[in-house]
Length: 231
Image (cartoon, rainbow, N blue to C red; front, side, top):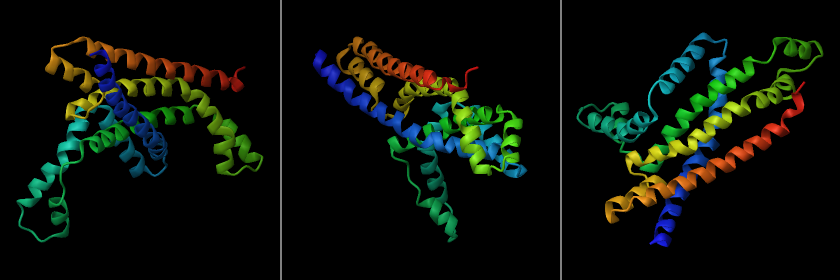
C-alpha cells in the first residue's frame, strides 16, 4: 500500500511541479511588464495597471480560478442565445470551457504576475534617483542605466520578498484541486474517499516540506551571492 500511495502522490507531485514551473516561467516576465505599466507616465495606462493589480490582489485566487474555468463557457452559452450575426457575438458563442490545467495556469500566472509586479515596482522605485542622474551625466543611455545600474540593485532588493512569494506559490498549487486538477493533495484525498485512509494526506506534507526546504536553501545561497552591494 505504501508503494501504491507513493506512486500516486509522485504523479500528483509532477503536476504540482508543472504548475509551479510554468507559472514562474510566464509570471516573472509578465509581472515586470505590468510594473512598467504601473510606473508609466501615461496616466490611462498607469491607472489601468493599478486598478487591474488591485482587483487581482484583492480577490481570492480560488475565485479567479473558478471564473477562468467556467467564465468562457458561460459567456459562450449567453452568446448562443442572442440571434445576431455580429462577428463578436459569433466569436463569443464559439467559446467553450477551458481545459482544467490551462485554466489553473491562466489564473496562477495572472495572479502571481500582479504580486510580482508590485515587488518589481518597489525594488525599482527604491533605487536613488541620483544614481540615474549621475549615469545620465556620464552619457549612459536609458538601456545602459537600467541594466548596469538599476537592475543589479533591484535584483538584490527583491530576492527576499520574491522568495517568499515563490514559496507561497508552492503551497498555493494545492488550490488546483478545486477544479479537479490531479495535483498532489487531490491524489492524497483520493485515498480518504476510496480506502478510508488519512495518512496519505499527511504524507503529502513531506513533499511540500522537501520542496520548500530546497527552495529556502537555494534562495539563501542566492542572497549570499548578491552581497556585492553590502556596505
